[in-house]
Length: 89
Image 1 (cartoon, rainbow, N blue to C red):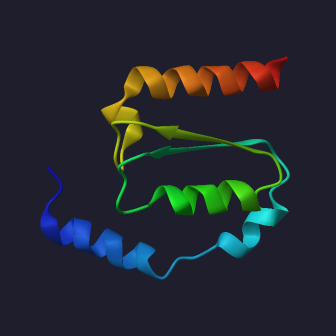
Image 2: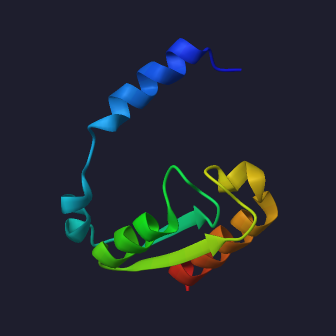
Protein backbone atom coordinates (compact mmCIF):
# COMPACT_ATOMS: atom_id res chain seq x y z
CA UNK A 1 0.00 0.00 0.00
CA UNK A 2 3.08 2.25 0.08
CA UNK A 3 2.92 4.91 -2.64
CA UNK A 4 5.66 4.29 -5.22
CA UNK A 5 7.25 7.70 -4.70
CA UNK A 6 7.54 7.10 -0.95
CA UNK A 7 9.10 3.68 -1.53
CA UNK A 8 11.54 5.20 -4.03
CA UNK A 9 12.61 7.85 -1.50
CA UNK A 10 13.18 5.19 1.16
CA UNK A 11 15.30 3.19 -1.29
CA UNK A 12 17.34 6.29 -2.12
CA UNK A 13 17.97 6.95 1.57
CA UNK A 14 19.22 3.41 2.13
CA UNK A 15 21.21 3.07 -1.10
CA UNK A 16 24.31 4.82 0.20
CA UNK A 17 24.12 3.48 3.74
CA UNK A 18 26.84 0.92 4.36
CA UNK A 19 27.84 0.34 7.95
CA UNK A 20 29.34 -3.11 7.59
CA UNK A 21 32.68 -1.81 8.86
CA UNK A 22 31.05 -1.19 12.24
CA UNK A 23 29.80 -4.76 12.66
CA UNK A 24 32.96 -5.94 14.40
CA UNK A 25 32.41 -3.37 17.15
CA UNK A 26 29.08 -4.94 18.11
CA UNK A 27 29.78 -7.12 21.12
CA UNK A 28 26.19 -8.06 21.92
CA UNK A 29 24.76 -11.38 20.74
CA UNK A 30 22.94 -11.00 17.45
CA UNK A 31 20.50 -13.01 15.39
CA UNK A 32 20.67 -12.65 11.62
CA UNK A 33 17.65 -14.05 9.81
CA UNK A 34 17.50 -14.05 6.02
CA UNK A 35 15.09 -15.51 3.52
CA UNK A 36 16.66 -18.14 1.28
CA UNK A 37 15.02 -16.50 -1.73
CA UNK A 38 15.89 -12.88 -0.86
CA UNK A 39 17.25 -11.17 -3.96
CA UNK A 40 17.48 -7.71 -2.36
CA UNK A 41 19.68 -8.89 0.52
CA UNK A 42 21.10 -12.23 -0.59
CA UNK A 43 22.09 -15.03 1.75
CA UNK A 44 25.76 -14.30 1.00
CA UNK A 45 25.31 -10.82 2.48
CA UNK A 46 23.74 -12.28 5.63
CA UNK A 47 26.58 -14.79 5.93
CA UNK A 48 29.09 -11.92 5.66
CA UNK A 49 27.22 -9.87 8.26
CA UNK A 50 26.99 -12.77 10.70
CA UNK A 51 30.69 -13.45 10.19
CA UNK A 52 31.59 -9.84 10.89
CA UNK A 53 29.61 -9.71 14.14
CA UNK A 54 31.34 -10.95 17.28
CA UNK A 55 28.53 -13.26 18.44
CA UNK A 56 26.00 -13.97 15.73
CA UNK A 57 23.62 -16.80 14.99
CA UNK A 58 22.59 -17.09 11.34
CA UNK A 59 19.28 -18.52 10.20
CA UNK A 60 18.37 -18.98 6.54
CA UNK A 61 14.63 -19.48 6.22
CA UNK A 62 13.55 -21.59 3.24
CA UNK A 63 10.53 -20.41 1.24
CA UNK A 64 11.08 -16.81 2.37
CA UNK A 65 12.35 -13.81 0.47
CA UNK A 66 13.03 -10.25 1.64
CA UNK A 67 10.45 -10.16 4.45
CA UNK A 68 10.83 -13.44 6.34
CA UNK A 69 8.76 -12.31 9.33
CA UNK A 70 5.45 -11.92 7.46
CA UNK A 71 6.35 -14.63 4.93
CA UNK A 72 7.23 -17.33 7.52
CA UNK A 73 5.94 -15.96 10.86
CA UNK A 74 5.91 -19.26 12.76
CA UNK A 75 9.45 -20.21 11.76
CA UNK A 76 10.73 -16.69 12.35
CA UNK A 77 9.12 -16.60 15.81
CA UNK A 78 10.51 -20.01 16.72
CA UNK A 79 14.06 -18.98 15.86
CA UNK A 80 13.69 -15.66 17.67
CA UNK A 81 12.24 -17.37 20.77
CA UNK A 82 15.07 -19.90 20.78
CA UNK A 83 17.65 -17.13 20.51
CA UNK A 84 16.04 -15.17 23.36
CA UNK A 85 15.77 -18.31 25.50
CA UNK A 86 19.51 -18.94 25.05
CA UNK A 87 20.23 -15.35 26.09
CA UNK A 88 18.09 -15.70 29.19
CA UNK A 89 19.73 -18.98 30.27
